[in-house]
Length: 498
Image (cartoon, rainbow, N blue to C red; front, side, top):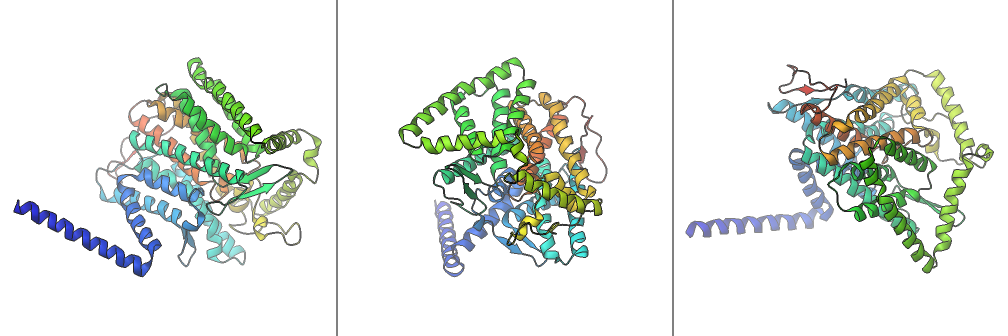
């Protein structure tokens, strides 16, 4: 009894001491500093115990779900790093720490390790190219290199999120974040309040229609394709109505972007999905569409009763008009964005012709202003992801990018049926199709290089390669071999595409 009393007393004293310490910190440093410190400690621990939660946290910050004012920049003299950047860097450091400090740790290699590393290396060279070839400061040139660091998410995901349980949590977390982003986009559009919860969002108004620009739309796109893949391939799912509602919410948010590239690439990938599914899988997927259609009819009736049909019709008409102009001669008129983008490409190709190997460097303007008062940032921007990479880093950056993109998509499309876990099988297929769709979309919209939009792609690469690696190690992937461990690192293992 005396021992129990002493134990309770020590716990009570410790609790009071912690409470007093936190109170003093709140009073002296302020609540934001205290919460930030506690969050930092939590992230530091979670990177070892539940790394998938850190990946989801950095996605929340980088995709715009958490307001930009909380994704603060830290000045490191040579450049600025945001909170989400530091999370990723910490995950990379954890991989190094565990590889060097744990004899049982297995460092997993994938077929896209080298091209991803070469790609980021090309952007690092692009910093030097910009500094040495122009009057840019080192700090200014590092901005784009900092953005592209998210492709390195491949390495911590493959090496830390390397169990089925963690991969399932990460996959479900991405769906949840995509759903929350979609709801945020719907709320912002309905209230016509851009950046309701943070910066990086904008809304443009046409003839009765509203178009939202949100950096997290790519995460919504990936979440939708991942959901469709799981619905088709995971026969354990019973919540058909819930899945239909989720798909409708995600699709509605993408509809509000009025992005022709999103609609066309998404439609192509859904058709592609339908062609590679077996009959029972296609039946399981198609059963959801009548439910979605019924929900749409019900919502249209509510909109009509609420006297909001004018906005709904204007939104639909604007989408149809934008699609119809794709196949008419009007697409070449000066009132269309294509004419402006063709002028961009002319200037870009001139620079590429003069700097084919290394490009012109990062954050370096490639053209003069098109009109007086044009924002300076537009002279850095090209409406084509591949041309943007080629312009900034030359062939040194573009070739590795195409290498790892095609390799990841090809590997998944070749081996998705060999993946044992139904949910992970659907996730891998859906994410691969989403990435392939974005490869098409980037011909006119450079989400592969846009801050906020590109973070999900590094995560997709990591998830798919981790899923394939897990099944390769279990001997479930036909055509993939597991070479013997190399002596450099204890427990080292790798797999390669056959």
